[in-house]
Image 1: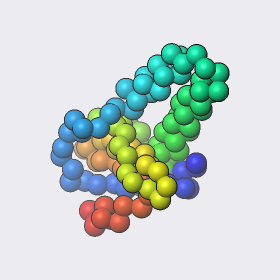
Image 2: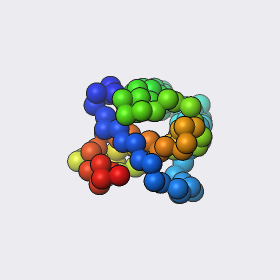
Image 3: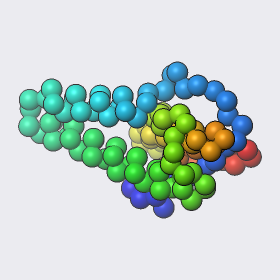
Length: 117
């Protein structure tokens, strides 16, 4: 997945905490623990693939957010959430930049309701 495959939104009015979302750092740890704890080789490879895919998505999301004004200096670290997709759940990232607190949301699924902000 590349930045061109993602929808990025900048929202100025969100003043909430994301207590029900997982921080990207915690999500990475979860993926790394699942990988390191697995003994079955094919499953272990799947776990490593999930970690690599997440890192690629994270990097692409940062690039996509730069298109709409993110400087990548986090006021609130990125968190991950999931939306229903066509065949499976799709991850999205949300964070606040340290530029007066603009909120950035990046997803492979279009969120039209965010364009009104």
